Amino acid sequence: MRWLRRLWPRTLFGQLLLIMISGTLVIQLLSSSIWFDVRFAQVLEAPVRLIAARSAPLIAQADCHGAALALPRHYQVRCAEAVPAAEHDERRGHRRIELLLHQALAYELGRDPQARLLKVQLTDEQGQPIVWRSLFGLRTAQAHLEFAVPLVDGHWLIIDGQELQGWSGESAWVLISDYLLRVYALRIVAVLLVCLLAVRLCLRPLRRLADAARGLGHNLAQAPLPLDGPEEVRQAAQAFNAMQQRLIGMVNDKAYFLAAVSHDLRTPLTRMRLRLERLEDGEHKERLRHNIAQMDGMIGQVLDYLRAGEQQNLQQVDLDRLVARLCADLASAEEPLPIRGQAGQARVDALLLQRCLQNLLVNALRYAREVSVTLESTRHEVCIHIDDRGPGIAPGLLATVTDPFVRGEGSRNQASGGYGLGLSIAQRIAASHGGELVLRNRASGGLRVSVRLPTGGTA
Image 1 (cartoon, one colour):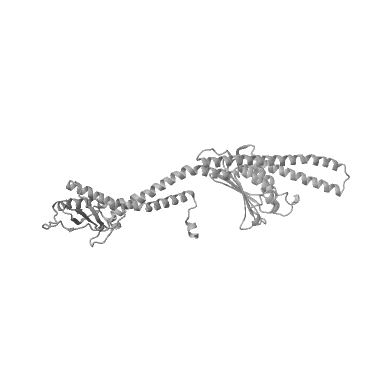
Image 2 (image 1 turned 90 degrees about the horizontal axis):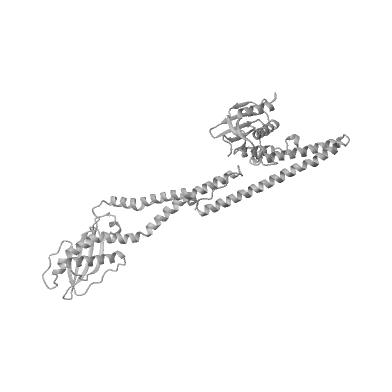
């Protein structure tokens, strides 16, 4: 069963094509019996008419008590007092041949002699039946017909004749190739075209739905899906749009709640600072001042995180100048922050992107050494790589280190690196521009953090 699963197509087009072709072949095989009956009668039509034409004079001159008749070659005639038993043949083609024999004899004699068909078969040169193969002309086939005609004196005239069937002139391979081409090949091609048309018409809305679902993680406020296509696809698009609106409402409510709480917390902090100033200087006062500063810093980072997902002013920005100015502000004699390459221009929010790169550079300067920046530009995106020679990040944390309040370093001491929101803010800023933040450990030691942004920004 495993190899069957491996052969099963993964795409809807492949599955639809396999099902339709298999179904067509099965239906064709099941209907072969009907086709055979029709073909069997057609193959024998010419020999039956020829046998009737040559038998008509024999029937007109027949006399069981008289002289022998001059018989055509491959014909035998005998008299019997009773009609012999006919071979049992339930095929519909047998009934058609009997009707054809009656019609042909009636045409030749001017009356219906009430003939009874006793036996009909197709044989080869040795007299062996070759019914199926004769349909394709694989051998020179002969029609063997035996029938009985009642005479006036009460006897039965039994005529046994052979004639070549009408399809023997064609080459066997010509007939086979013509049959396979017209019955199977053309039908499979037609099924393929139908599948292509069906997939193109029906899967276009589904592909649009999949693209919208993938883009939802980067841009929650993207345009809703149009309600077109089949009824099922329209219902799926309508459900997707409703889900998108609910997600937007939930995110907005959450952001509003966090922003309101963070903002309102600063009011009691301000009162605590005022009261703290009235206390006498000492170790207790310094600890309180430090705790208040930590709380205020955490509130500030939460507000920055919420604002990071909002684009405020998209415009064409010279990334080379922006990065050069930022590195010049953060560089020192110990860490000169060299820059390599060029990125050109991109449509971004300059303040948000500067905050994103500042968070990444500050992290690199805090935890590592030999920090450098590399700029790259392609037709569709620009990349800003920040490389360092530090401890890197544990492989198990690479996938989650950009989540809020997750840090590669264990403590949440502000002096040792903040509260785990720096990379989250950078990630949200990159995502709000339709880009991404990629972190990976360098093979030679250290970390590479890459900001990938589309050259046109988001819509």
